[in-house]
Length: 150
Ligand code: UDP
Ligand code: MG
Image (tube, rainbow, N blue to C red):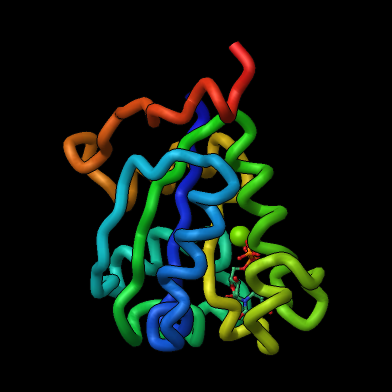
């Protein structure tokens, strides 16, 4: 089953949007299989954003993501990687469509509330980076037949 890595960044936690963001993924019908709050180390932040290492915003991005608690999650469901990116919206919240998380709650690219894996392979790498296998819980919601045609 497809899985994606989602992180509520320090601004989302500080602004009290943890419940609202989790609510949206739950209401959509995806399954939460991993969840933890953590203070991100510089080492983890730099590994997570390794593809952006040479970009000018890299130092401020690492400083921001390590500046306060983050809520790290793994969500499961067919098509969850691409669907989560749609629910999150464009990187710049001012360009993100209303109805998306960034479009509804943000105004600045450096404070865009949430991270979501951009592809299935990226999701696999990020899940392995943030979670141990024991921290992930495989379970079938009882409502599954009412969400997915068998
Ligand atoms: N970012 C930034 N300034 C930029 C571009 C990106 O601060 O000009 C930050 C922003 O927090 C973004 C993250 O770097 O979410 C990773 O950038 P990416 O292009 O991967 O955006 P995302 O996949 O998060 O939409
Ligand atoms: Mg990205």
